[in-house]
Length: 125
Image 1: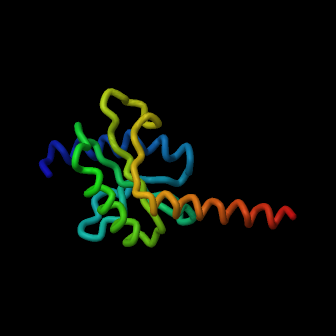
Image 2: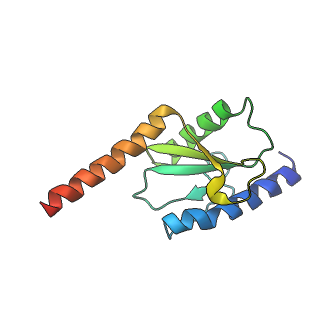
């Protein structure tokens, strides 16, 4: 990765962060972590997934690599799943960017929140 693409990636991560913070106040950027990267945006411990950000002009042929990277980073972070938050050409609004994941990751997130909802209903009786 060149310095220019690294800067572009860091700027994209910083631009995405406020949107994630509106969902989870203590979300924050992790920065460069070396070999055992744990994603780009850290979400609170109870959130079952990591966020891997990608700011590239094209995602053609790259999604499988990004998803594999997200899966490994989720494991290193001790999380059940991952999402790849990637650039949507022509859209600057963070909530209009793409979120991609493999089916198993999606189902892990759904199962987690479904179990949380069941626990809440059981508590309320």
